[in-house]
Length: 268
Image (spheres, rainbow, N blue to C red):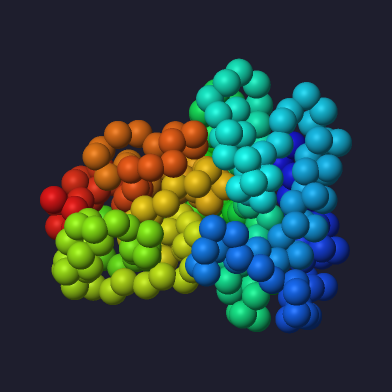
């Protein structure tokens, strides 16, 4: 299954995404829920190809794509019901893609009754794929098939932590509360691309991430990748993350003790 899914992600990236990168023309980009939520013809073409490809590979499984679910939010309820569902984000980091920045990814996750069984984050530019399976660890798979194990960074005090803190969807008073405390960390970034932020986190290149908006195509694959790389993640109130729940925020750190320390520093 892993090899077949990676092959599909590579093929769709090669045929539907990369030929359109830096070649979008007027009318190829529009917005959905607002100016921070763009979609391009590449997103839509890639989702159609991924949907068809996954249904051909796994005839008994359902497929939930970002663009389809954005048009009909009731589809999210499918995730908690019996049966396997593939969640796909055809281009994560669409704003970067549209701005001709080579920092975007393709994400896919296999979910059954709100439990994440497998996650894939493919980089169309470097042609490698971060992969995790429940209980099977997290790996980076190169274009030639070579694999290396992914492991989160070692725990450090909050003052030495680096990471990506996405605050733009936070509502007041949480927004101001968090912003006034970010200087407690060593460095804070936001790459406008959860795909690469999760890859960095699982590979140990940063210590923590915070997200407010929890749409499943943005987080299901990355959450499992981080977990299988040894990390610890919980919603802001300490409860477990599940793909069908889209509120409550998400904080990810190397371990439970680090989560408690960072939550105390930023959220409490």
